[in-house]
Length: 185
Image (cartoon, rainbow, N blue to C red; front, side, top):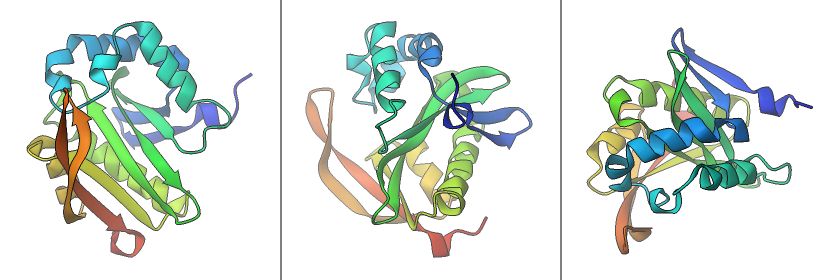
């Protein structure tokens, strides 16, 4: 039986929407990961752990489990095809803050898809979830990704030294934040 939360869909544009991720998305997501592995591996530590559709299924089961209140993840659907993933992680309801994480297929880069998807999630975080703070963490040197929070009015708070283990070595992360009072739809 489908619940209301499993049907959650957020419109972004006429050709773009976000839909709550489910185990049924495993094959499509794994295909993108596997196809774009060299490109995605430069910045995403989970790529090496995603070696089969079953790995993607396990992740999707985890994030969609009824007891998981720390994550809310969506597939990005552009022109009726899944092309990436975006979502809230580290949801802290007590302190009204969360982090947005995302990745997009290489052939969809440079079209404003991720910026628009992030804007939609930020609006949802502030208006529906009543959050006060949204964070985005980006690997130092990942200019494409760091342009997103910059264009959306986030503040660069600093660099988290050795914030992520990536391809066998620690990598610094830029930490961006946006507060509810700073967000102008």
